[in-house]
Length: 240
Length: 74
Image 1: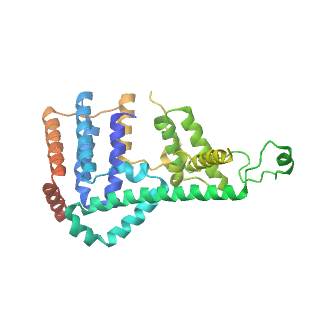
Image 2 (image 1 turned 120 degrees about the vertical axis):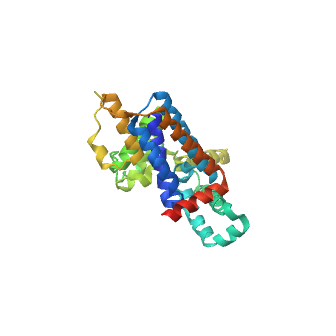
Image 3 (image 1 turned 60 degrees about the vertical axis):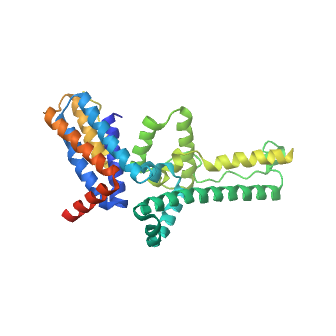
């Protein structure tokens, strides 16, 4: 992706953010719209174009700094659960905005967002720890897992009855485009692609069409697998 | 000859600024871009405007004034 395309994509994200969260700041986009269009429509040297791109990026950096967060934080870096918690907390804080304004004045918005993100991360982490401890308790209560290679297990195992016996994945077009973008731009190794494919297969087991809401679960490491690995390790140590 | 764009792309709502940038890149690659030359004077004006906006965004007071000014005009 060229620098100009990257800038275009960044402007799109920021436009979306401003429209949803900070409509009063639309003047920034309106001013930039004219300048960006002029950069696009006119013939400039590569050097001049790069200077303009750098300057607009510098402006966007300053805008991001103003709110003490990056736009990526809101959409990409937080997991689905963290984002959900963050939105819930932010709504709670918003209903108590007067108190924040009294204490933090013009920085109230920044504090509310920052605190919501921080608390959401901490809550999500606690939830995960609780899940691990519950899984360990269940595993200990049920005794050691069956040896899958034993004759008894092979003879008694139930037939596979999954909704996705042949690995197939269905997804809508926006997700298809995004996944292709991920494969072209973001995936660093073959393992990233394999991991994303495995996550898509896993998500398809509920026999549904995947959409953009599933994207974070496709490209982020599978937490469930990590937890299972951890439980296995703990169980092995306990057995020893 | 540039690479053909997949027909599926039309179903995906791409952001308008990214699309503008892509269209320009495509036109340049295909040799069909016909933009007017940007003068040095205009280039300097744009840089000055961007510098002014950066200054406004950095300063709490100026930022609030600009917000009010714009929203009043709207």
